[in-house]
Image (cartoon, rainbow, N blue to C red; front, side, top):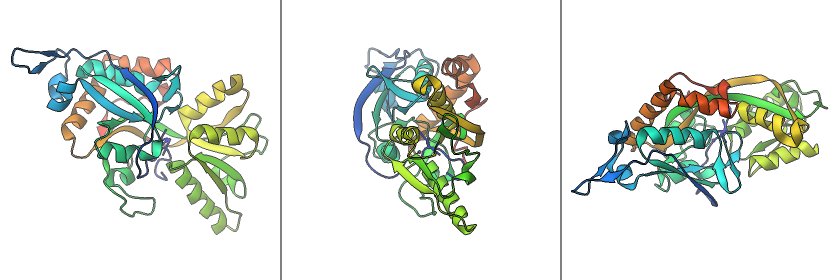
Length: 316
Protein backbone atom coordinates (compact mmCIF):
# COMPACT_ATOMS: atom_id res chain seq x y z
CA UNK A 1 0.00 0.00 0.00
CA UNK A 2 5.16 1.18 -1.19
CA UNK A 3 3.64 1.71 -0.44
CA UNK A 4 5.72 2.00 2.31
CA UNK A 5 1.78 0.84 -1.88
CA UNK A 6 5.45 0.73 -1.06
CA UNK A 7 4.22 -0.06 -1.50
CA UNK A 8 2.32 -0.13 -5.21
CA UNK A 9 -0.26 -2.50 -8.34
CA UNK A 10 0.19 -3.54 -11.80
CA UNK A 11 -0.82 -0.06 -12.83
CA UNK A 12 1.77 1.44 -10.51
CA UNK A 13 3.54 -1.18 -8.33
CA UNK A 14 3.95 0.19 -4.67
CA UNK A 15 2.49 -0.15 -1.17
CA UNK A 16 -1.04 -1.53 -0.91
CA UNK A 17 -3.13 -1.36 2.25
CA UNK A 18 -5.08 -4.58 2.76
CA UNK A 19 -8.15 -4.91 4.93
CA UNK A 20 -7.31 -5.46 8.58
CA UNK A 21 -6.81 -3.58 11.82
CA UNK A 22 -3.60 -1.63 12.30
CA UNK A 23 -1.30 -2.84 15.06
CA UNK A 24 0.17 0.16 16.82
CA UNK A 25 3.92 -0.20 17.21
CA UNK A 26 4.30 2.52 19.79
CA UNK A 27 6.32 5.02 17.78
CA UNK A 28 4.54 8.35 17.84
CA UNK A 29 5.61 11.88 17.03
CA UNK A 30 3.87 15.23 16.89
CA UNK A 31 4.95 17.20 13.85
CA UNK A 32 3.89 20.59 12.55
CA UNK A 33 4.72 23.96 14.00
CA UNK A 34 1.48 25.46 12.78
CA UNK A 35 -0.79 25.03 15.77
CA UNK A 36 -1.72 28.69 16.25
CA UNK A 37 -5.14 27.90 17.71
CA UNK A 38 -6.66 30.25 20.27
CA UNK A 39 -10.14 30.52 21.76
CA UNK A 40 -12.22 33.66 21.48
CA UNK A 41 -14.55 34.87 24.20
CA UNK A 42 -17.25 32.46 23.06
CA UNK A 43 -14.88 29.48 23.16
CA UNK A 44 -14.66 29.23 19.38
CA UNK A 45 -11.32 28.14 17.95
CA UNK A 46 -9.50 30.86 15.97
CA UNK A 47 -6.22 30.57 14.11
CA UNK A 48 -4.08 32.83 11.94
CA UNK A 49 -2.80 30.06 9.63
CA UNK A 50 -3.78 30.64 5.96
CA UNK A 51 -5.94 27.53 5.56
CA UNK A 52 -7.20 26.95 9.10
CA UNK A 53 -10.73 28.04 8.19
CA UNK A 54 -10.86 25.30 5.54
CA UNK A 55 -10.60 22.52 8.11
CA UNK A 56 -13.57 20.66 9.64
CA UNK A 57 -14.59 22.13 12.99
CA UNK A 58 -13.66 18.94 14.85
CA UNK A 59 -10.08 19.22 13.56
CA UNK A 60 -9.99 22.94 14.35
CA UNK A 61 -11.08 22.26 17.93
CA UNK A 62 -8.64 19.38 18.39
CA UNK A 63 -5.71 21.23 16.84
CA UNK A 64 -4.39 17.86 15.66
CA UNK A 65 -4.65 15.63 12.59
CA UNK A 66 -4.09 12.00 13.58
CA UNK A 67 -1.91 10.17 11.05
CA UNK A 68 -1.44 6.42 10.62
CA UNK A 69 1.86 5.32 9.09
CA UNK A 70 4.32 2.43 8.90
CA UNK A 71 7.67 3.92 9.84
CA UNK A 72 9.90 1.27 8.27
CA UNK A 73 10.47 2.89 4.91
CA UNK A 74 13.40 5.31 4.78
CA UNK A 75 13.71 7.92 3.44
CA UNK A 76 9.92 8.34 3.32
CA UNK A 77 9.23 7.42 6.95
CA UNK A 78 11.34 5.60 9.50
CA UNK A 79 12.10 5.68 13.20
CA UNK A 80 15.30 7.15 14.62
CA UNK A 81 15.80 7.37 18.35
CA UNK A 82 12.12 6.75 18.97
CA UNK A 83 11.08 9.56 16.63
CA UNK A 84 9.39 9.19 13.25
CA UNK A 85 11.42 11.03 10.61
CA UNK A 86 11.55 11.29 6.84
CA UNK A 87 9.96 12.89 3.81
CA UNK A 88 6.36 12.35 4.94
CA UNK A 89 6.74 13.75 8.50
CA UNK A 90 8.63 16.77 7.17
CA UNK A 91 6.01 17.41 4.50
CA UNK A 92 3.37 17.11 7.21
CA UNK A 93 5.26 19.72 9.20
CA UNK A 94 5.06 22.09 6.23
CA UNK A 95 1.36 21.29 5.74
CA UNK A 96 0.78 21.99 9.41
CA UNK A 97 2.07 25.52 9.02
CA UNK A 98 -0.49 26.15 6.28
CA UNK A 99 -3.35 24.54 8.17
CA UNK A 100 -2.48 25.72 11.68
CA UNK A 101 -2.62 22.28 13.31
CA UNK A 102 -0.19 19.57 14.33
CA UNK A 103 0.14 16.22 12.57
CA UNK A 104 0.37 13.35 15.06
CA UNK A 105 2.04 10.28 13.51
CA UNK A 106 1.58 6.81 14.96
CA UNK A 107 3.40 3.84 13.45
CA UNK A 108 1.82 0.43 13.05
CA UNK A 109 1.41 -2.31 10.45
CA UNK A 110 1.08 -1.12 6.88
CA UNK A 111 -1.58 -3.57 5.77
CA UNK A 112 -4.24 -2.16 8.10
CA UNK A 113 -4.00 1.53 7.27
CA UNK A 114 -7.08 1.76 5.06
CA UNK A 115 -9.25 0.02 7.64
CA UNK A 116 -7.84 2.20 10.42
CA UNK A 117 -8.61 5.39 8.50
CA UNK A 118 -12.11 4.27 7.52
CA UNK A 119 -12.88 3.23 11.09
CA UNK A 120 -11.95 6.70 12.38
CA UNK A 121 -8.90 5.58 14.30
CA UNK A 122 -6.87 8.00 12.23
CA UNK A 123 -7.92 11.07 10.30
CA UNK A 124 -5.52 10.27 7.48
CA UNK A 125 -2.92 7.74 6.37
CA UNK A 126 0.43 9.03 5.10
CA UNK A 127 2.83 6.22 4.38
CA UNK A 128 4.06 6.13 0.76
CA UNK A 129 0.69 4.76 -0.36
CA UNK A 130 0.26 4.56 -4.11
CA UNK A 131 -2.98 6.06 -5.39
CA UNK A 132 -4.82 3.72 -7.76
CA UNK A 133 -8.39 2.80 -8.69
CA UNK A 134 -8.17 -0.45 -6.75
CA UNK A 135 -7.70 1.36 -3.46
CA UNK A 136 -10.09 4.15 -4.35
CA UNK A 137 -12.86 1.58 -4.88
CA UNK A 138 -11.88 -0.94 -2.20
CA UNK A 139 -11.12 -3.81 -4.59
CA UNK A 140 -8.68 -6.72 -4.42
CA UNK A 141 -6.26 -7.49 -7.25
CA UNK A 142 -8.98 -9.51 -9.03
CA UNK A 143 -11.55 -6.72 -8.91
CA UNK A 144 -13.58 -8.19 -6.04
CA UNK A 145 -15.06 -5.74 -3.56
CA UNK A 146 -13.27 -6.04 -0.21
CA UNK A 147 -14.57 -3.05 1.65
CA UNK A 148 -14.78 0.71 1.58
CA UNK A 149 -12.41 2.56 -0.68
CA UNK A 150 -10.59 5.74 0.24
CA UNK A 151 -9.93 9.14 -1.27
CA UNK A 152 -6.38 10.25 -2.05
CA UNK A 153 -4.66 13.62 -1.99
CA UNK A 154 -1.62 13.11 -4.22
CA UNK A 155 1.67 14.70 -3.14
CA UNK A 156 4.56 12.67 -4.63
CA UNK A 157 5.35 10.24 -7.42
CA UNK A 158 7.52 7.13 -7.47
CA UNK A 159 8.20 4.14 -9.67
CA UNK A 160 9.23 0.57 -9.06
CA UNK A 161 12.83 -0.50 -8.56
CA UNK A 162 14.49 -3.89 -8.24
CA UNK A 163 17.40 -4.14 -5.84
CA UNK A 164 19.94 -6.96 -5.59
CA UNK A 165 23.07 -7.82 -3.66
CA UNK A 166 26.04 -5.61 -4.47
CA UNK A 167 27.67 -6.87 -7.64
CA UNK A 168 24.39 -8.42 -8.87
CA UNK A 169 25.72 -12.00 -8.68
CA UNK A 170 22.68 -13.45 -10.51
CA UNK A 171 22.87 -10.92 -13.34
CA UNK A 172 19.27 -9.71 -12.88
CA UNK A 173 18.39 -7.05 -15.45
CA UNK A 174 14.62 -6.82 -15.01
CA UNK A 175 11.58 -8.42 -13.42
CA UNK A 176 11.36 -10.93 -16.27
CA UNK A 177 14.71 -12.38 -15.13
CA UNK A 178 13.13 -13.56 -11.87
CA UNK A 179 11.42 -16.58 -13.47
CA UNK A 180 12.47 -19.68 -11.53
CA UNK A 181 14.21 -17.58 -8.88
CA UNK A 182 13.36 -16.36 -5.37
CA UNK A 183 12.27 -12.76 -4.82
CA UNK A 184 11.53 -11.04 -1.49
CA UNK A 185 8.80 -8.48 -0.93
CA UNK A 186 6.75 -6.88 1.83
CA UNK A 187 3.48 -8.69 2.49
CA UNK A 188 0.30 -6.98 1.33
CA UNK A 189 2.04 -4.64 -1.11
CA UNK A 190 1.22 -4.22 -4.74
CA UNK A 191 4.79 -5.35 -5.37
CA UNK A 192 3.63 -8.73 -4.17
CA UNK A 193 0.81 -8.52 -6.74
CA UNK A 194 3.27 -7.45 -9.44
CA UNK A 195 5.44 -10.48 -8.68
CA UNK A 196 2.42 -12.79 -8.86
CA UNK A 197 1.47 -11.29 -12.22
CA UNK A 198 5.01 -11.73 -13.51
CA UNK A 199 5.13 -15.30 -12.19
CA UNK A 200 2.05 -16.15 -14.26
CA UNK A 201 3.75 -14.65 -17.31
CA UNK A 202 6.72 -16.89 -16.59
CA UNK A 203 4.62 -20.07 -16.48
CA UNK A 204 2.55 -19.00 -19.48
CA UNK A 205 5.82 -18.78 -21.40
CA UNK A 206 6.84 -22.26 -20.29
CA UNK A 207 9.30 -21.04 -17.67
CA UNK A 208 9.39 -21.75 -13.94
CA UNK A 209 7.32 -19.64 -11.58
CA UNK A 210 8.88 -17.04 -9.30
CA UNK A 211 9.32 -18.24 -5.73
CA UNK A 212 7.78 -15.26 -3.93
CA UNK A 213 8.74 -14.83 -0.28
CA UNK A 214 6.50 -12.28 1.44
CA UNK A 215 7.45 -10.75 4.78
CA UNK A 216 5.56 -8.76 7.39
CA UNK A 217 7.86 -5.77 6.96
CA UNK A 218 10.30 -4.51 4.39
CA UNK A 219 13.32 -4.93 6.66
CA UNK A 220 12.83 -8.69 6.67
CA UNK A 221 12.68 -8.72 2.88
CA UNK A 222 15.92 -6.75 2.72
CA UNK A 223 17.61 -9.19 5.09
CA UNK A 224 16.56 -12.08 2.88
CA UNK A 225 18.18 -10.48 -0.17
CA UNK A 226 21.30 -9.55 1.78
CA UNK A 227 21.73 -13.14 3.00
CA UNK A 228 21.42 -14.50 -0.53
CA UNK A 229 18.19 -16.34 0.23
CA UNK A 230 16.47 -14.20 -2.42
CA UNK A 231 18.11 -12.94 -5.58
CA UNK A 232 16.20 -9.65 -5.56
CA UNK A 233 13.77 -7.44 -3.72
CA UNK A 234 11.21 -5.02 -5.18
CA UNK A 235 10.50 -1.62 -3.73
CA UNK A 236 9.72 2.00 -4.53
CA UNK A 237 12.56 3.72 -6.35
CA UNK A 238 13.48 6.35 -3.68
CA UNK A 239 13.43 3.69 -0.97
CA UNK A 240 15.57 1.28 -2.99
CA UNK A 241 18.07 4.04 -3.79
CA UNK A 242 18.28 5.09 -0.13
CA UNK A 243 18.80 1.45 0.83
CA UNK A 244 21.57 0.96 -1.73
CA UNK A 245 23.32 4.15 -0.58
CA UNK A 246 23.16 3.52 3.16
CA UNK A 247 23.03 -0.22 3.96
CA UNK A 248 26.49 -1.28 5.15
CA UNK A 249 27.87 2.01 3.91
CA UNK A 250 26.61 1.34 0.40
CA UNK A 251 28.22 -2.09 0.18
CA UNK A 252 25.16 -4.31 0.62
CA UNK A 253 22.84 -3.59 -2.32
CA UNK A 254 22.54 -2.01 -5.72
CA UNK A 255 19.54 -0.90 -7.78
CA UNK A 256 19.22 -2.27 -11.30
CA UNK A 257 17.98 -0.08 -14.13
CA UNK A 258 15.89 3.02 -13.51
CA UNK A 259 12.46 3.32 -12.00
CA UNK A 260 9.48 2.24 -14.09
CA UNK A 261 5.68 2.31 -13.84
CA UNK A 262 5.75 5.58 -11.90
CA UNK A 263 2.56 6.50 -10.06
CA UNK A 264 1.39 8.98 -7.40
CA UNK A 265 1.64 8.62 -3.65
CA UNK A 266 -1.36 10.00 -1.81
CA UNK A 267 -2.61 10.88 1.64
CA UNK A 268 -5.61 8.61 2.28
CA UNK A 269 -8.90 9.69 3.85
CA UNK A 270 -12.36 8.30 4.48
CA UNK A 271 -14.48 9.19 1.44
CA UNK A 272 -16.92 11.00 3.71
CA UNK A 273 -14.21 13.37 4.93
CA UNK A 274 -14.34 15.64 1.88
CA UNK A 275 -13.75 18.90 3.75
CA UNK A 276 -10.44 17.71 5.20
CA UNK A 277 -9.51 16.19 1.84
CA UNK A 278 -10.01 19.48 0.03
CA UNK A 279 -8.13 21.43 2.70
CA UNK A 280 -5.17 19.06 2.40
CA UNK A 281 -5.10 19.47 -1.37
CA UNK A 282 -4.96 23.24 -0.98
CA UNK A 283 -2.19 22.86 1.58
CA UNK A 284 -0.11 20.62 -0.70
CA UNK A 285 -0.46 23.13 -3.52
CA UNK A 286 0.51 25.93 -1.12
CA UNK A 287 3.75 24.28 0.03
CA UNK A 288 4.67 23.50 -3.58
CA UNK A 289 4.17 27.17 -4.42
CA UNK A 290 6.09 28.57 -1.43
CA UNK A 291 9.11 26.28 -1.96
CA UNK A 292 8.97 24.41 1.34
CA UNK A 293 7.93 21.24 -0.50
CA UNK A 294 11.06 21.23 -2.66
CA UNK A 295 13.29 21.90 0.36
CA UNK A 296 11.96 18.79 2.11
CA UNK A 297 12.58 16.61 -0.94
CA UNK A 298 16.11 17.99 -1.35
CA UNK A 299 16.84 17.32 2.32
CA UNK A 300 16.06 13.62 1.86
CA UNK A 301 17.38 13.21 -1.68
CA UNK A 302 13.89 12.56 -3.02
CA UNK A 303 13.69 15.26 -5.70
CA UNK A 304 12.89 12.68 -8.38
CA UNK A 305 9.41 12.35 -6.86
CA UNK A 306 8.45 16.02 -7.03
CA UNK A 307 5.10 17.00 -8.52
CA UNK A 308 4.00 20.43 -9.76
CA UNK A 309 0.41 20.26 -8.52
CA UNK A 310 -1.66 18.07 -6.20
CA UNK A 311 -4.63 16.04 -7.38
CA UNK A 312 -7.52 14.19 -5.77
CA UNK A 313 -7.73 10.54 -6.80
CA UNK A 314 -5.30 11.08 -9.65
CA UNK A 315 -4.15 7.45 -9.72
CA UNK A 316 -5.28 4.98 -12.38
